[in-house]
Length: 366
Image 1 (tube, rainbow, N blue to C red):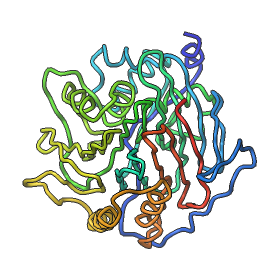
Image 2: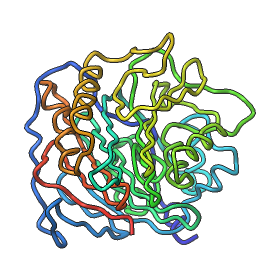
Image 3: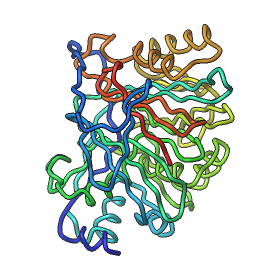
Image 4: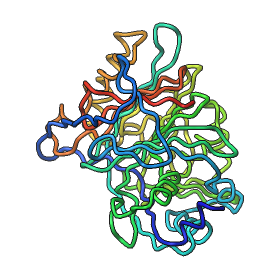
């Protein structure tokens, strides 16, 4: 395939998991961003963006790209998936990227998600990604086989020869790597997915006869192949989960019926808990319940209180809820690198970069 031939020239990739930063440190940043003058039409919710197959920087540290075609994910699954980031890297470099030299790294993070209905009966899903300053990229993907989706990647987790993601100059290479490293997203059926960290010494290493999946490739699996929460749970049950970098994580899933759940792994057993809010502690009943950061309990309580006071929310209400639990409110040196409000009913996403909640970018899965 033409794109794959280009990859043989260089490259790339790292798949550590997602970042949001460590908690309870330092002082906050102002999070201000500068709008790019290369914009399309505007609407009240923000600047409407039409991505192309060339990576476009919307502002410093925030870019977007569109990918159409086969990126080998069906082959990845048919060959048994991967039980570690290294195996994902081996697949990319050996099968698709012709011997590329890759690396990976990661850090702990503290994110928040909230699911709610709007006044018209539609569904909204909000997500904060908290980490050190990083390069974020929105990827709209249109696979040959699977659902169209948009997802977000921390490009600082993509590397070539040990360099950070900004060393990758070829748009096609960088995009291919990003397709295997989503941290959140929504597909054309309105399924929304996010992964959040839990600070716990345990990890996830399921070991049966099932094929294997890692944290970020699990998100790609669900975006490509699941239309509802129930379908997503069934898919996850068909694979052995392996947490990237040995970190404990859990997933937030929500669909257009209003169903929203947390998927957690306790002693390597998948546990599903219905909840509209997820931060960074276990919700599963039992021995692990409540384990996580103190601040994550505060953020959870704040979001639950807002849902208690508001039976429905608008896109701007969800944006304000995310703003209320962003890092700038807690006097920390990290920022909320991106916030998203997914309108699952309309298949639109509004992004806010580095806690600038005045200027949004609107993407549509067309």
